[in-house]
Length: 218
Image (cartoon, rainbow, N blue to C red; front, side, top):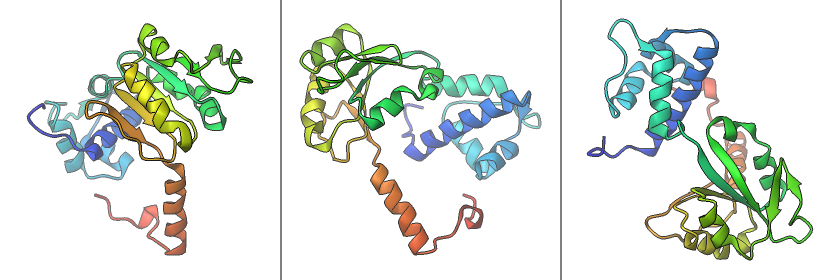
């Protein structure tokens, strides 16, 4: 696996497979074929087999994939078979919603620390977590062994805060601020821009793009 570059699209599809397998497990499936898994995700069986082949041998020809075993192996590949310590910075509307998002905990992302620079929020309690001030951010991140940071702050302050986060030893950041941030090469940064996603949807409506059911499966 290390000799071949894994594309972002493959990683995203693994996440979809994991969720499909979780649903199949709830539906009491013991095995699933590549065709069945592909149909659930609007893909081809060949694409499913190709994605999985990057990570080893799965299933038995003619018998399909054991649902529980494949789900567990994909969880290990995605790194969600363990607990990650997470800090969330910015307890505004987006940040508060993220704290309440139960799927994080189910996937092993433990929001351990909350930070904000609003004096009215510092010391308050969100889902059992006390909001901390920003003055001692770097030390708190290190002492609490934080591994991932979610950034939900205004664009105007995002870069300064991210610099402190990096100084605190963080190598993985999920950014919700609508701005391109600069980080060192050894830091993984993902930016979720909800405005851009809405613009894509509005473009689709204005230009009458093919609906989901009209698209060719790839």
